[in-house]
Image 1 (cartoon, rainbow, N blue to C red):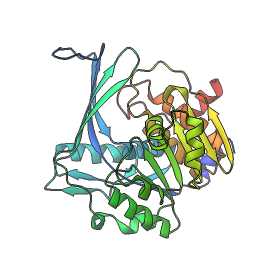
Image 2: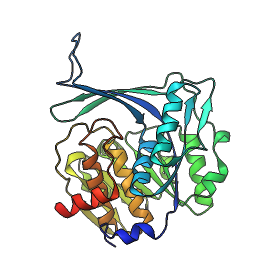
Image 3: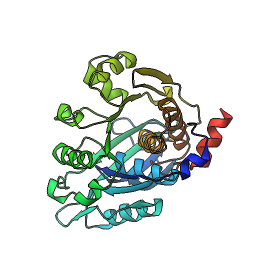
Image 4: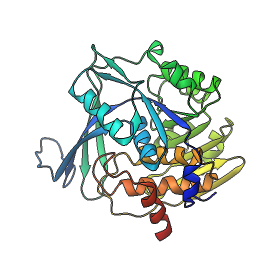
Length: 310
């Protein structure tokens, strides 16, 4: 099935639930990254919701999918902004946990205006970890796909087991190597990871070789994202590489998250793996045209048109 077949998006809308970190992103675009003891004036700035899983769900919802988020915030102004923005994108928030003893996580992001590269500092020093008992069991048992980010591993694994017991498939967004990763991988069906993760986990800087190593764990699909260079994938004994799409990048923040949202959209439509990866690469590239993780999330029509033009 082709990602440009609009009728496929109307066939069904399976529920996708995400469990993971949510934060409020404070982004500054600067002419170049500051050095020690330097002071710079921002070229532009934005405040948007962040976090890999909720941003992926925003992308999925904007493309036309059904999404619901489970994550932990404080009862504060930032937490309310995050909830409100998710709902504006069409992401359901009944499973969110608002903890009076926590402060909503914040991410401070500096973007180099020359190429859109960014540096991120996350502050969740005053946020309590999500507890298994805080998970919305009914929501997890009703989803078709579950997206997790590998943080708060015990809760992520518990959520995955609940969802899988009810017939769901689990997608892992792994940007970095974290504790108990092997235990987490045991409950994953679709592994979609960064080059940073694959290099460290497999002890090789060759993405194709990393696919072979990761493929030994019998995932339904494995994808290693390569930033501007696209992605490599393996599924059902087949492998492939999708080149990246060229755009004038303003900010790469959230590109990987949008990739995940678009990837899950393709899973929901039962597309072939090659078409899913192509669609996800195109959506991620289009996001980079605007600052912040969510402002540049494209619509389905925009991704389809962009692919046709390419």
